[in-house]
Length: 369
Image 1: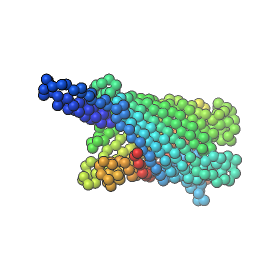
Image 2: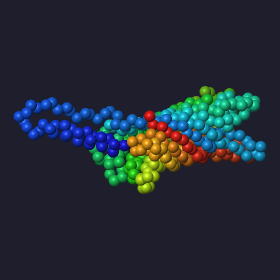
Image 3: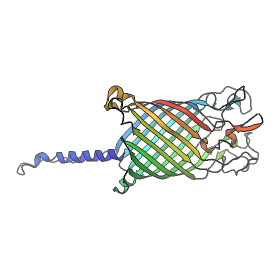
Image 4: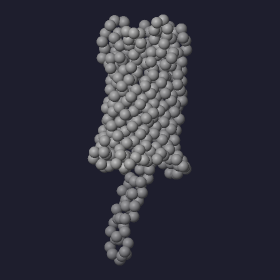
């Protein structure tokens, strides 16, 4: 991204040298005022996109159905509508995305607590849940801040300060309302064919969330406030570590007539953050379990640049069609083998219900505007 900034700066400087050239030949001629080279714009790149995508076999902790043969179905399809903004400015980058996830009936909205039943265990048919999730990340490059190239060596392109936040809201029974902040460093590396690889070790703090299942009087938790239930169902987790990575690379080694493809991906690891209903203490008897390391990833996405293929290089990445694989283990930090939401009793034995692990094909279309 800083490559583009440098190119724009070089172009501006070369234009500045051309402007007065016609007046250097004769000093005895009237000297015309020379316009100063235009300053670089505050934002060097602004990129806004909308996406429609489909997750074929997503999962939502605690949401599952039991088939007539006793097997468990914890999969739910989700339609996703997203807006994404990216910009590059003199000292770093800003990335923001907000998405609406619309589930099928296996992940129902309130008042259902699971597919086909309400909180009173009465039969009901509820619409699929809707969730709004927003995320932003901003970086401040050390090379730009200190006007140096010290933080560029070999494949290392830059080191940056990174800050960000996540937030969501949803209409499921447990009413999650996640709020977290992150801060740390980002190390940016160059890859071949205009690619990049970024890795960011971060401090992660989910300082607020909500869980109706842990709320006193919900019928799913114990009766003692502060020991086996939370008065308002609001959780506040301990700060922990996180590592986020992402990469992108054009498949430039392909023959020119087929250079419409690129690969990209991301992954995030988030450390243990206390109990799953923090600040309640760990207690198997009270159904309070320790959190586990969360792994949220899209290890590979293959993108076809449809607009470039149809209209040429000028319209590169205006319309992208892509397919990806999505894997999410210990979703939201819930231990997929132990947490109350992640297990079920089948034939007298407690087993994982599969709702805290997501493994799915994921595809969509993205349009730049």
